[in-house]
Image (cartoon, rainbow, N blue to C red):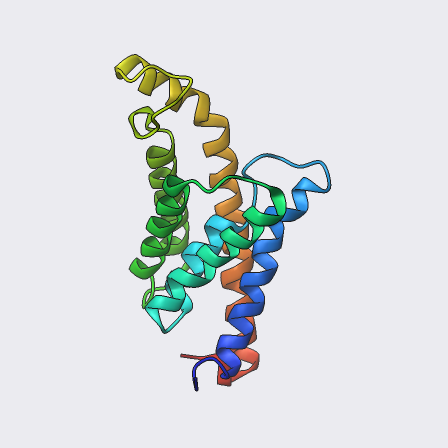
Length: 175
């Protein structure tokens, strides 16, 4: 309970909410598909939440809530992909710097792309369940991968730098 009432948790939660809104807001205005802060949010949560359980729960809850509002169906693969992105955040947890955040952004987008476009995972798909179908699925997903990668880079920079600057100004936010 003490962690939940801490200034650090409150600020991290507000950043999570702001990032989650980037997923729902594009449905109200013109947008670029997959250019949201949700991937960066998963990396950020993995790197910043002291409680590992909360690091997984916060971005997945943000996904679930935004899925309700935007009417997306629940896809276990998408949630598994975001879980892998949180794990990428764990890898930079005690080594947050520009290089590591860029690497985590790239690696997590790549893992998400590989998981969610692997045609064999889906019982009903536009693509045949063979190597040609898998390659076609990956080729069709490249524009979405590019947008997610750019979104991860941009929003990771915003989230990590915002929290860094806030924690310099307010030392109570430090781990």
